[in-house]
Amino acid sequence: MAGETRERMIEATVTALQHRGVAGMSFTDILAGSGAARGAIYHHFPGGKAQLVAEAAERNGCEVRARLAALPADSPQGVVAAFLELVRPVLAASAAGGGCAVAALTVGVGSGGDDMTLRQIASTAFTAWGDQLAERLTAAGLGPDAARDLATTLIALLQGAHVLCRAAGDLEPFEPVARTAMTLVAHPG
Amino acid sequence: MAGETRERMIEATVTALQHRGVAGMSFTDILAGSGAARGAIYHHFPGGKAQLVAEAAERNGCEVRARLAALPADSPQGVVAAFLELVRPVLAASAAGGGCAVAALTVGVGSGGDDMTLRQIASTAFTAWGDQLAERLTAAGLGPDAARDLATTLIALLQGAHVLCRAAGDLEPFEPVARTAMTLVAHPG
DNA sequence: GTCTATACAAAGATAGAC
DNA sequence: GTCTATCTTTGTATAGAC
Image (cartoon, rainbow over all chains, first blue to last red; front, side, top):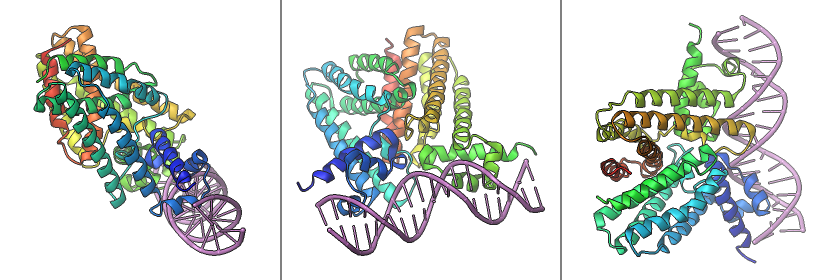
């Protein structure tokens, strides 16, 4: 079926991005992970690696955003608690060698033209996540300014926990971060 | 003088790590940045890239730890404020294309033997930073448990801000994070 | 200790048959 | 639309002269 192979290649790229990053991943990984042939890459992605990585990161960014949009908005505390439970398994995967596919676009890239495009994609995704989270927090009754600050902080904590958990190889660094996040929402602004 | 070239190579590696990461950096960068000849690398670092990267990251980790040790300990609020002012210029460099050399060891590495060693080095550095920060906070009067949680959270916020600021290309994401960190220390535990 | 030259492998990118 | 084969570049690693 048309687009089937292309789809599998994008999925494989998301996984490769999480595990090895932009510079660390190779087409060999993508081909092994998707079962596609070598020439198929440039058939589906004429822009080469840059295009493939860009599409994979955008895909992953939208998926995460959708999951944030599905958070309950009963109370600010409830939103933060649900957010923490949502990211816990993701961080567990990070500790096991995974990571954030969007964050991968920000490291290991220089100042070249294509690299700036990738950074832009990451920035857009992070902004979208923050906006979505802030929307949930305001829907739960938090003031607009406090919601924005808290949302950005939660995204930063998530990314920081990715780095720390990946280094530690377990979820241990996440626990104090989660405790702090809960005390945060108890004393906004 | 003996060790002069070796020193410059380590310095160049720290910079390369910050800008390109482990997989993204190459010996070409290190040679250009240190003025050394190609063969000099394996003369000073028989272990090749893994050894060079490991030593550079350990060096950088110790330098950061020393700067954390120099923080004043007048009050918990004072420690956090001084920490934020300490990291602000670092994050500005990150926004301009730099980054955290230690965090670079956690991404873009697989599950190989050398890679696990690098992850271990990063983990050790992060733990040392957290311990040092917690020590300052307890010296300023905070309880041991609250100090540990807050210290780990601040390190996570720092790493998260690195990712966000690098993606955004400016310091803007750091401001709400800094505001939140100050409100945090006003309501410990 | 420092340099030049080079071997060897891996990765990205293409061409062309089917 | 998919596959095999290959070109080119880059990067790690090594050998050996000075």
